[in-house]
Amino acid sequence: MTYTCTDYRLEMILLGLTRRLSEEKLSEEERRLLLEEIRRIEIQMGL
Image (cartoon, rainbow, N blue to C red; front, side):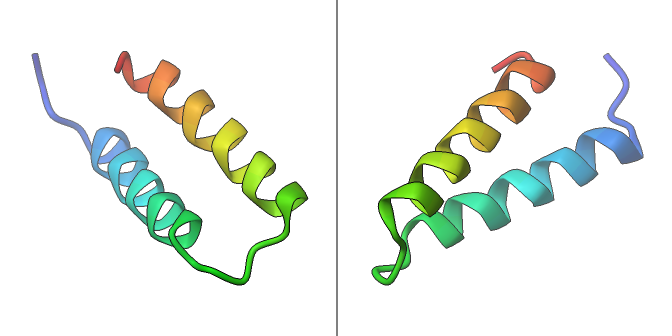
């Protein structure tokens, strides 16, 4: 399997979203949206 720039980009986006999720000052709506986006990227990456 080839590791592409797109793979790297998705990993970095996922990392950023996960870090944002750990912030204490998130509303429930923001937390829900972050979790949805994380799940979407994980599916796209085959995780």
